[in-house]
Image (cartoon, rainbow, N blue to C red; front, side, top):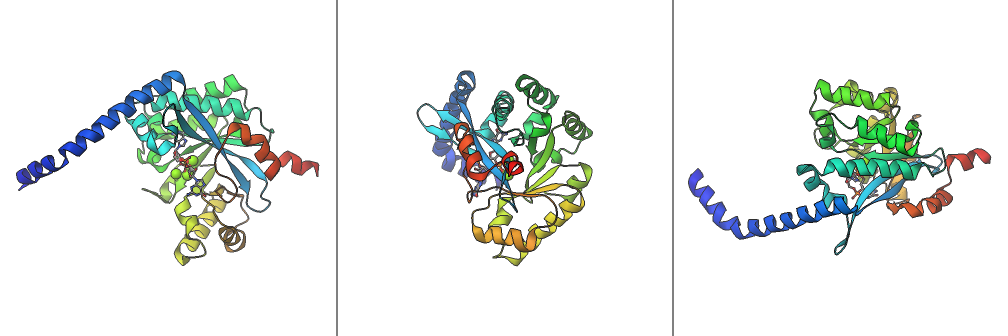
Length: 286
Ligand code: C2E
Ligand code: MG
Ligand code: MG
Ligand code: MG
C-alpha cells in the first residue's frame, strides 16, 4: 500500500515539484546576491502607550528591496534564509541597522528587533548584539529583542545561557506572538522576559469572542503579577482599543501596536511619526 501511494504521489506531484524547486533555486540565488549587495531595508512600526497613545518606540521589520519584484515581505524570504544559513548575516545587518538608525531618534524611544531561532544555534546572538550596540553607541536599555516560542522550545541550558548573556548586555527581551504555536506558561516561569507580545489572533476577536477577551485579560493580569510589560499586537480598530482600555487593561504597562495607528514605514518617516504621536520627551515638556 505504501508503495503504490508513493508511486502515485510521485507521478502526480512531479511537474509541480520541479517548478517549485526551480522557483526556490532562483530565490536562493537572488537572496545570496541580495546579501552581497545589501538589498534589505528596515521598516518601522510605532508602539504606543495604551492609555496616552504616546509613542514608546518602534519595531524594526525587514523588507527585501528586490530589483525586479519590488518590496518583498519577510514571510517570503526569512524561512529560506533560515534554511540556508543566510539569516545569520541578514540578522546581523538588521541589528546594526536598527541600532544605528535608533541612535538618531528622540532619546526615550526604544527599538525592537526580531531574532530568528536559527540565530540561537552555535554561539548565539550576544556577540552580534554587543557589536551593534558598540558601533552605534545606542544605550542598551533602548534595545529590545523579540524572540518566539520556537527559541524556548529547544529548552536547553544553552538557550537560557544565551538569553542571560543578552540580558547581561542591558537589553530587554520580549516574547513575540504569545499564544501561538507551542506556547507554554512554563516559558514565562523559566525565563524572566521583560515583555510579552500577545499575538494578533487574540486581539482580532476581542469584544467579539468571550474566549479571546478572557484570554487577553488573563494574560495581561498574569504578566502584571510576573512584572512583565505587555503589548497587544495587531490592533486594527477603535472597538478593540475600547476593549483594551476598558475591561482588559490592568495597572501594568500596556502598549499597543497595529494598523489602526500606522503600518510599518520606512526609516525616513520616523520624524513625522514622532510628530503625529508625540514622544515621551515632548510629553515631559508640557
Ligand atoms: P512579528 O514580529 O510578529 O511582526 C508583526 C507583523 O504583523 C508584521 O508583519 C506587521 O507588519 C504585522 N502587523 C502589524 N500590525 C498589524 C495589524 O494591525 N494587522 C495585521 N494584519 N498585521 C499587522 P511583517 O512585517 O510582514 O513581518 C512578519 C514577520 O516576519 C514578523 O512578525 C517577524 O516574525 C518576521 N520578521 C520581520 N523582520 C524580521 C527580522 O529582521 N528578522 C527576523 N528573524 N524576522 C523578522
Ligand atoms: Mg516581532
Ligand atoms: Mg509578533
Ligand atoms: Mg508574527
